[in-house]
Length: 435
Image (cartoon, rainbow, N blue to C red; front, top):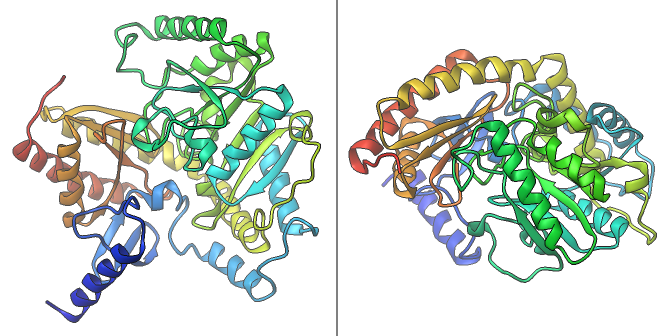
C-alpha cells in the first residue's frame, strides 16, 4: 500500500469514527476529491475523473471557473460576512437579476444558505398566508433534509420519520412511466392526475396552503409528468386560492436545456406563486433562496433575518457565476450537448435489458436500471473508468447524470463510452429485464 493509500484509509477510518452512521458516501472505497478544473476533478491519490454529477447538481458552470474564483478572492480580501441587517450591493444586484429572470410579477427575493432552507421558507410563507398547515406534494418527491421538508417528502427512502408539523396530502403526477396511470396517453394522464387532485381536495378537511412540486424530481431519479401537468394543476389550485411552489433547486438556471426554469414546461396557466432555488447558482458556494410575489413574501408579521443568507462572498460568487452562464448561453449548450448525450445513452441501452428507461432533458438525465444492485455495479465500474455519476430513485434503481452545463461534445462522448462499458458489466453481472 502506498503512502497516499495509507493516508486515504486512515481518513476513511476517522470519518466513520466521528461522522453519523447515516451519512452516506458513494463507493465501497469512498474517494476524497481534492481539486477540480472545468468538467474534471481529482482525488487524493491523484486519479482524474470526468464529473457527471457536479457535487449533486451544484457545480453548474465549471470547477474552478476563473470568473467565479476571482470574484470570491476579491470579496474575501475585503469582507466575508455582514448579515441581512446591513445593506449589500452584491445581494441587491443578485436579487434584481433573479427577480427579473424568475417570471414572477412584482417579485421579492430572500436568500438562504441551501435548498432545504429555501423550501422551509416557502412553506412558512404559504402556511402563514393561508392560515393552514395542509400541503399538497407529489409522490416520489424530495424537498430537503430538515424536519419540515422531510414531512413533505414523498420518497420514503429519504424520509426517516412520519412526524411532521405539516399535514401532507400526496397526489399523482411525479412519475410518468410507473403507477396506475402509466398506460394512458399524456393528455389522459394529465386528466387522471387532475381528477386525483380534485378528489384529494374534496377529502381535505380545511384550507390547503400550497402544492409544492419539482418540475423534474431530482432524488426521485429525474422523473417527471408530461409538460403542462402543473399548469393543469394550477387551474384547480387557483379556484381554491391554493399557492403553487415550484421547487427549482435542481431544475433551475437552464439545466433542462429547453427552459431556464423547470416550471416553464408548465407555463400555460402562468408562473408559480413561489419559486425556490439553490445549488447551481452558487456553483458550490452555500447559496439558496425564495422568489415570491410581494403580497406572498410580505405576509410575515414577525421579525425575520438571515445571518448567513446572501452573504457578501456567496452573492459575489453567484453574480459572477450567473453572468458567465448567461454570457455563454449554457442553457443552449445543455440543450444541444444534453440531447446528443441522451441519444447516445438510448442507443447504448437499446440492446441491454438491464436498462429499463432513459429519461430526462438537457443535462439532467436519468437511467433507470433493473434494480439497485445493477446501479451499484454501474457506479463502481464508472468510477473505475474515470467517471463520477449519481444515483437515486425510490428503490435506488436509477442513475443520475448531471454534468456542469459547459460540458463539451467530446466530454459527452467520453462519458457515454465509460457508461456503455459500465452498463454492459451490469448486464453481465446482474442481468435483468423489463418489469
